[in-house]
Image: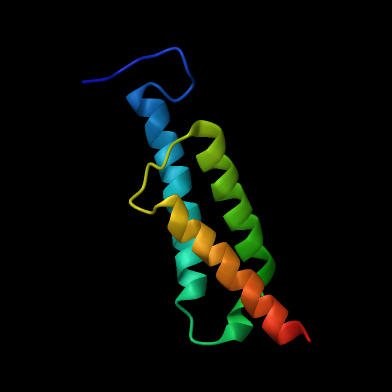
Length: 91
């Protein structure tokens, strides 16, 4: 059964588009944070991490939606972990 409402993502089909986008970004972030070395945050993927974190936080806040099992707290933790690691290793 499909639902329809006045906002862009009130229909099931449109919500699926948003869900797929969230899921892809979150998987990218998770993959980076599961690597063993802190260097993974600053190698080829380092700039992508903060970009992905910012994108997902912006989408979550703007659409007031968390369509994956990942909670906003987990994403915020990734951001803080990244910034703490950056501060620790940049000096």
